[in-house]
Image (cartoon, rainbow, N blue to C red; front, top):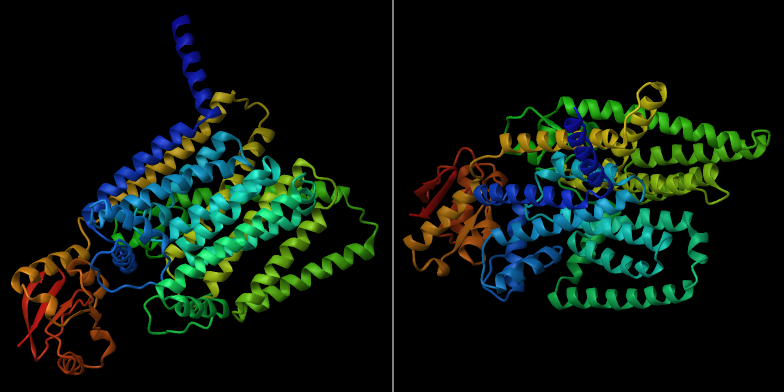
Length: 575
């Protein structure tokens, strides 16, 4: 018995050590997940269109022959990938490695950010949940720009919070990481909304910083230097006009394109698929279902998390509102009515503007509504409750700002929800923690030791991780059709050594351009009413070869013959 008790104490102490500082364990788990997913990604190939654009741009930045170059796209991932190319490793795997490294930085940053609100083991569980949700796990090493944009947004928010509360020198890092986030993904600039919100509700704390004027001056100098550098870069690349047009189209939400595969005018698209973004089922399925969770169904775990989180958040809101209204003088009816009316008007105005898809007005009204509610409930002394509430409202503004933006834009794909993932995970952990505390209160007989409380969170984290890993494995294919494009391109180089002097077109031109290291123009049968019209298009443009990769039924072209087939990819040659 004594021996068993001694072993139990050793396990308990070891568990407590992990609970007090789980960062090393988190890094090891993250490295394991990244390594596993990279091995699968290297096997199945590039998952989607845009990655080939980034690869072609990386070749350009490395000073190598490249396919079609799109210099108006965010440059961070191509520039970092080009560094590996310059070392002599020119492969699609390079962009997967870059993505994996950035994701590791992001998980560490998110853990530190969560620790500003939760204890270490809760922050650990939140970080594991972040890794595990489908919209994250399927894109971890994809070569896309959505996760890198979120990674540097997380660090930007972290530097702002800790710079204000702990070490003001960290405020100098806010602007550089914000610029990096925007260079990773332009629309990451929307993180300015929660940043400004947090600054505004903590304005007095900023003013009390001893070196306030010095910091403001330093940040202004940083701003001037960084903006000048960014503008010079884009002008030098000749992409200035394209960037301005893109910004205008996004800001005014004037983008049209009912014929685009991503066109979806449903404003509630992301809310309707929210459960799919938490956990996906069943364990077996198609690759498209994990890339686009809206095509799948929520798992039982997703329903359980949603129900428990909702109950926990309702308890938290009830307790918070109850305590705050006890401090408010309800006899001051005129002031109360005035504040309540203002909030009601702002909410109604927001709903109307959102319904009519007015992006800028909706964002302004969102900001005003949250700020007014916060000031109504949390004015006065700077208490720990107010500090926590400030973080809660900041994360709420984060989630809502990106939700409004992506909901109003007419183009919707599930990976855009990645921008909202950190905020969603934050509120899931908040809801779970409040629910667990509530259970302890109503069950006074349930007294768990610190190690067992810690064990509850570790079990939650591991269940989520194992479920996500099993789901990803069950949905991952043996390969994607982009590997067939690689095979077709390599075969063509042997079939026609003079291919670089031939007119080659494809319905996946950026991929063919990457593999052939030449500029390839697009040719899309779906844009023509008949096969004959498409045939005439090819002949009138003196096309020698056409590579068809996305059509289920490959067209029978009068002036072209099929010379080779690789999986779903067909290679045509002019007769």
